[in-house]
Amino acid sequence: MPLRAPTFDMLERFAPSRPLRLGTQRRRARQGERLTGAGGLAAAKRPASLDTEKDLHATSVSDHAEKTLWHVLQEVKTEQDRYQERIALHRKLTRTAREIWEEWRAKGVDDESRAWWEAFDAARRPLEGEASPDTYRRVQAWLKANKPQGSCAKAIRWERRWIGLEQCQKQWIGYKAGCCGDRTGCVAVPVGCNHRLCPLCAWHRSQRARITVKKMYDRLTHPVLITLTIPNQATIRKHTFNRLKQCVKVWLSQRKEFIAGGIYAVETTYNRAEGMKGGKPWHVHVHILADMKAPLPISKQPRDFYGAPMIPFTALKWWWEFDWLQLTCAGQWGRRPKPEPPKRDRKKKKAWRLANSDYAFDFERWVKAKREHSTKWAKRYDVGARKYVLRDDLSPAEMAQYKRLERWNALNTRVVDMRPVLDRDGAVKEVLKYITKCSDFCDLPAAVEGFCDAAQSVRMYQTFGSWYGLNIDTDFDPNHLDDWPAMPTCACGTNHWERIGVFYRRDCRMDSQGRWWLKRSITRNHVGGTVPRPTIRALDPPEERETEPEWITA
Image (cartoon, rainbow, N blue to C red; front, side):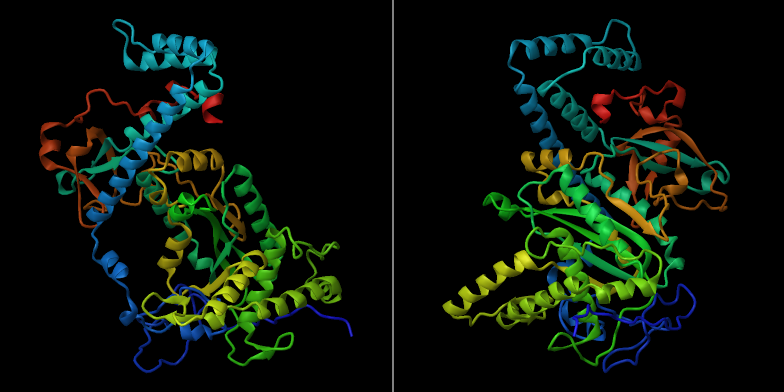
């Protein structure tokens, strides 16, 4: 009898109109819970992981008693406190960029590099009576004619990054509501540097992306949050991100019968402890907000799954995990079926999977091997931390066996997390949060330089399926006020904003909602702005802007 690959029938269920519910199934309230009018839990909890064989409903209980001190402190923090944290990280990153620039500047010790630096320093000295814009254009023309090479090019590039970080949000553009006069205060909009690691600009990029994605929520039928991971890396390169995006593209194409469309984001974190030990500190993973064609299976009835009972959700998750392992593993599980499945006919595609005995044979061997190397017996669930931790009563023999099983799991398994979306705002924040947590390594020059070189010109947001073509522009443009997330509504509601000038940071204030306003004393005494000569090139007319040299923008 030929072996068969696992198949799952996902039936379409009735769902009320959007956006009251997002594909979650209504159930009866348990003891100590209450249901809201929208059909969701009043205090729904998103689990730390769904990698167990527990029922999906068991992850939706209230967790008021399980909040840790960190969660309580995050709720107490105000917008001013969060802004001060971003300012502290920005200062660390600016100092790190300066250190990298000084290091590359010191490497030009040969005669040719020393001569080029002397000529460059002489060229960027302002001439007598020359304005700053004219000096800038003259220096750019000199750089175009005398292109730097090697360490000189690196030093110039990092000098520009350091200056950009140094000037980030130092100047603010003031806008006045011309439709309602003094009834509405003057709004202050910061001018950022758009650096990949800048925490100030990263917050702004995530806010703009969230506004765009939230507009697409009405199109979602059964939203699901999926996380795909790969093993930690000792170093990261541009090939790391490109290869990961290719694997995600293939993996999503294999799920067309389940996923209609969505958006995914590539996120990078850094483990300082592993970096200090010389291990593998870089962790690159993908968060996917997927629009499922049918809800995830929620049946509690276990079914026979290759010799052992398993609920349908866990069986589906293991199947998707094995497909992701085949794409990202170079070992014995890295083989993929040679014949390509049909692309359009769903029945033929299912028949192809059933007839492909090689795929089914590998999948069965992997399922049995994963059960044999399970480490659940050595862990217990910590309610306070909301995760599984090692037991304290393990003997030395059991600890040795646990480490052996962990080594096998690190090579032959992947963490693939799937959970239904119960909180719309929480799901968007999870997918479109800071793409890189610079707080992990903003004070490490080697890590900052390595990430900037690897992530240069790499797109971290990507839409697919029914969402393909959605424009998510996260760069700052002070002329596009409609996309500015903190732009308030004027008193009359017309929102006819007029630019009144450029101001310094000390002339602005933040309210409790995180919006910035110009101080009234400043607007009364300085109608045209407090910066006499703004250095904001974005305010120049398009026909007067100078294009960057290729060796800088590449």
